[in-house]
Image (cartoon, rainbow, N blue to C red; front, side, top):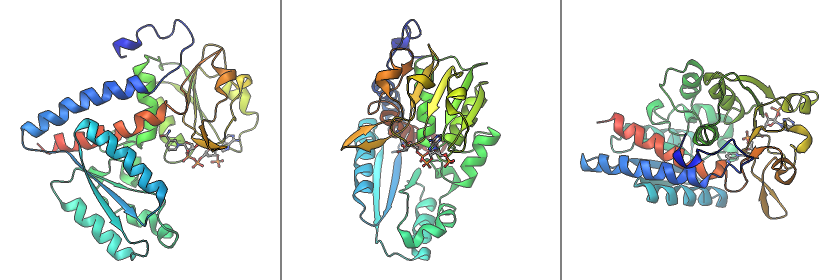
Length: 292
Ligand code: NAP
């Protein structure tokens, strides 16, 4: 638990991502500087296929965090109609470069390449898969052997809980959502911390009967307003991973106005999303440290 979070638990709290991000940035900056003194500049390659504005914005937000931390960003922008073989060759070449420590491929790929996504991802060297998207990284989360990275958003949710000193051992942790990038890995990470987990999804019957008994509720459904006050136990901790655009505004999956009087909740925006790119930088720096 971070010292600034020491009083958490005595009252309902807003689990803001900002202090988590700031504390990570300070620590990561020191680690990046120490690497540079040893002649290594941590470097992340961001690969985009096509000129999707959402991808460009995502890269901008990553660049901002990379600059704060001292990670070099190498932007690789490929033609929308690139062939499968050219794309996999590009990933092979980046994987082989010693000066590149992490590789992030922006997903989803353009339509024509989407059926080959798994094959494409397999061309990212497993140890440089800092976004935790390859099959090897998924296996590492399940085995807990430390040989790969969790997807950044899933780990960001865990960082938020750790920062605020939320006790997980023996607690009922309920995850709403079972995607491979968020719901499933979060559930496994919570299990690794000795929580007892329930995983809910669109076919779950009587969602509130499960969420209402949770001490810790992680919501990643992508459905604005899914979780109301009636879904949450008094005194629970709620991590809202949802990021939905409603009437031009970013909102989560949780009705914060209803939930925050009875439970501690992370805001959207300003919660998990603030921590995610710092996790990406942490992974990149870890790969660079392992190369020493
Ligand atoms: P996804 O692949 O669409 O998965 C959504 C999951 O929610 C599915 O497992 C789905 O169940 C479940 N679900 C949908 N409606 C439900 C309902 N009414 N009740 C219970 N479960 C329901 O989405 P994702 O990629 O995991 O992303 C989830 C959310 O996180 C999105 O809002 C996304 O924008 C956000 N996100 C945030 C960050 C961040 O940094 N904060 C990063 C990435 C994504 P089925 O499996 O049965 O379909």
